[in-house]
Length: 121
Image (cartoon, rainbow, N blue to C red; front, side):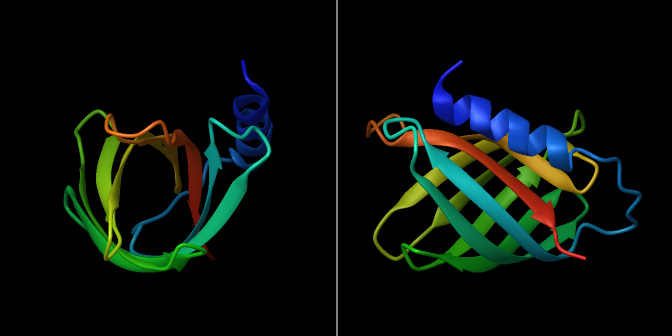
């Protein structure tokens, strides 16, 4: 397990508490790690809407503003696209209570890594 992945899992396990929530819609915080640079981490803030299995929203991070479009599968898997004005990233993960964790990237570039996001409040 690489350095960034080990940090990711330690961080996730500290936050991995079961949260009863009637709605996942609202403000979400998150962070993502770069696989190429084991020490690089970035944070983001999003306002997400969950309507049945559809995820939509918007947010901002150090790169700039972005839109979110995706879905939740019946098995709890999540897939969404984070779209900036100049490029986009694919995110695939798993819901655990009011948290989502997984991997991000594209096949077109070497930029990829892991992510963790959690509902605020």
